[in-house]
Image 1: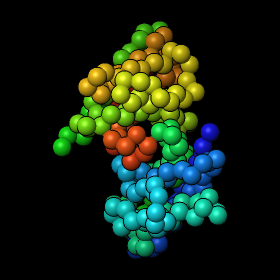
Image 2: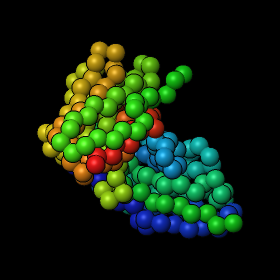
Image 3: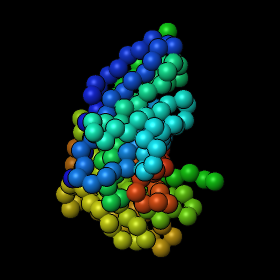
Length: 111
Length: 112
């Protein structure tokens, strides 16, 4: 079955710094890839998704991710972190309607 | 348009009891998935329904079951509750059936 590995369970950045959250996937067929964000005591909110076409995907809140098939990666970036970006981020891979999530990366933003 | 609604938000049950959780998807969404979220195991896939049929199933024991109704609303049931079933149960719906899911706020189940 498909799977996702998120590198780093905790990432800490300063406000205004680059955010880079790493995600590698495993799939035997071309997958759909997603990034979700979760704030405390809430469900998950879709940030962006890759299905087909352009490999650089732009999402909400200034986030973007690039699908790199040769590296089986789908890293999430944001040029300048805001305090409001502090949350848990999940990368997910979906094949044939079966979506699997990574373990999550908790992002801390320091003032 | 209304989001995904999960009821109840919080639930406390005793070991050995059974529980039913409800999920109303976004209008027009026919795919509904369920996930269990715990600090130790993260987000684990339970099952996915599309047009009343279970299309995918995760690796959970038979005590966990679900169903979907003709209006796409879904329920999941856990019988013979164990302490380890304490978790946040998340429901998500999609019109595409292959990702881009919209999640509800979850039902937090505590088993005592």
